[in-house]
Image 1 (cartoon, one colour):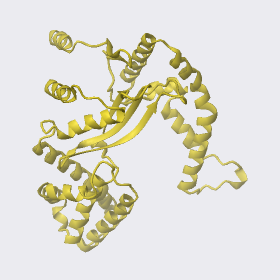
Image 2 (cartoon, helix red, strand yellow; image 1 turned 30 degrees about the horizontal axis):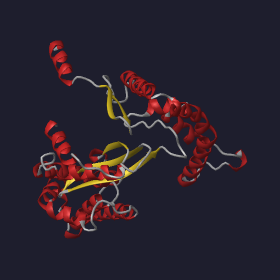
Image 3 (cartoon, one colour; image 1 turned 90 degrees about the horizontal axis):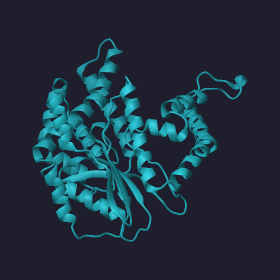
Image 4 (cartoon, rainbow, N blue to C red; image 1 turned 90 degrees about the vertical axis):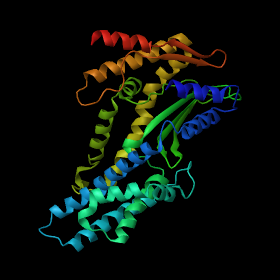
Length: 346
């Protein structure tokens, strides 16, 4: 990773951009061009694994569930059911917008470049069904959709957060990107969110990753409990005389969203406002201490949780970024020292 950092520093040395978004685009372009991060063989293996898993979970498992409900189905009947499953899935895909960072023919290019890997995945998963050419084409159309559309497989998704200021920007900005892996020479990503300090907002707390504990501190309620309350409230009839035990799921979802919006406006935001106002008034050193405390609190609760994998732990790196002083480490772990301590403990 040291070589990667040095390469990025060498590339960026002396370069200045007016906006943070331009810095972000430059960084993502560097990752896209770093073949040593994602060699061709690695790209092929990863794509094949993702496609195999998607076909199995969305198509084969669903087909087996349908077949289990019937006494007997002919081979032709199995193919017909599989075709219907894929067709319904493609209708859902059509609703997704195209990913802005890729060209219009990118999905087609992916299926062509990785054609052999797709053939192997199909053979390993679906050889017994003797697929027709139309079904084989439909499976590959799914791959086109998966790489062309604004969608990321859960196993192929990460987040990159970039904070700072461009040369022409007086106030700090935070940009969050949803990022996939490299395939066919292209890095798939989209801007998921942004936070700006300015006239409308003079301070905020923006958690990422395992954010539930920090959200609980800011909002006064754990997100999981909040979600359960919203779902329960949506199922409660406003008038028992009008109660229908067979309400449509869409109606329940609409009631849940309406009630959730009401709670956010009337309860959560007023609760969070004093905290965020205090954050905007804190000195920089106190902001650093607050950030470290929130991360340490998250790490403690994750250690105590039996049903979640812990991805946050000490020691915590803390840095300050300002227009005048630039980037300053407030607290930075000694990686070499940590490795030495652990080797002694072992």
